[in-house]
Structures are given as C-alpha cells and as structure tokens.
Length: 145
Image (cartoon, rainbow, N blue to C red; front, side, top):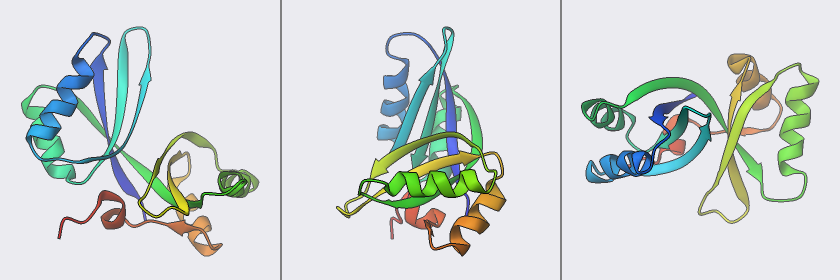
C-alpha cells in the first residue's frame, strides 16, 4: 500500500514556504505531515495532504514546481525500540531507507513514519507479511467523508 507524497521545490528565500502553506490553506487543503530539506540554492518540501488532487491543482496554478513520489506509511509503536524494529527488519532484507519523517496521530500509542525505500514494493510486501501495519492511502490522507 503505497501512498503519494507531493514534493514542492522552493527557492531559498524568505516567505516562500509561507506562500505554499497559505495557498493550501486558502484552498482548504489540510497538511497531514511535512518535511523540509534544503540545499544552498533550493529546498524540497515533502507533503502528505488530505486532498492530493486539489493540492496539486492549486500549487500548479500558483507556479510551484511539483514532483510526486511513492512512499510507505508504517504505524510504529510509540515506545523505545518501536522505530528500531522497522529499521532492523528492512535492513535485514537489504532495503535502504532513502529518507523518512514522522507525524503523530490522535492515537496516543503510535506514530506514523513515512518512508521512501529504494525497493518500495518489496518493502510493502515484507512489512505487511511480517506483522507491521502499513497504512492505506485513505487512512493516511484523512478521509473527509
């Protein structure tokens, strides 16, 4: 169960990140999780939002450069070693984590880790087949119904 993450490429200048958040807020798009990485020239804002299509549309209308990436959302126990159990497992199976970030749900006993794996399909199959909870996109994005 892969999910789609939006990547927004941003110039490194004051206010550019706020332009993205304002654009999404005005469109009624809720940001569920994000990660910002930068280089000397630009930043990459990685987003999980509740309405992917609307987000893509409004960001393109405002001339933002977008990319889409398949990621995997894994529910991780909010206990010492929770994340380590996932990382040890994928490592033992030769799967590399290219990057990851987290967010907390309203459920107090778990966190959600967003992973970009080098072997996404293999990671999903292995994780699901070995007792890890891989969230489907509708649960990750927050169903508005």
